[in-house]
Image (cartoon, rainbow, N blue to C red; front, side, top):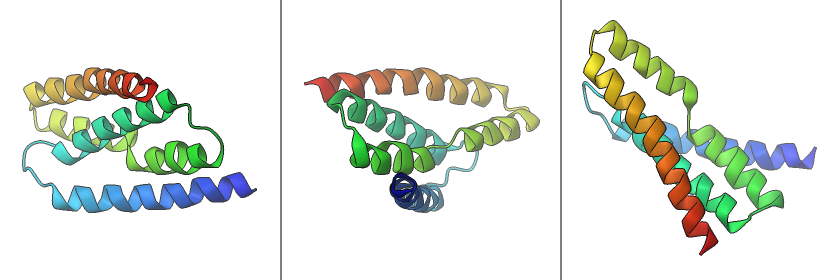
Length: 115
């Protein structure tokens, strides 16, 4: 029960931060805010894992905050919107940067956390 409260607290804060950043970062033809959020989240989650954080701190930050801050569903909606607009080059760039950049930054965070 108490674990759920820690996750909920982190999730609330992560969702609010994502909302604020998406409102602040507007680039007409490209979903830059979601890309930045997901790449930052990948790095931070790698850093938390690399540091070996566990317990309540990980529940709030890793599962709660970063789980709500990053968003796979918004990524897919953005990709579908670009696809429907026939912006295939943007679809490929966005998907590639998100997936390969996310893996790369996650590994970088893991490495930094192990220092």
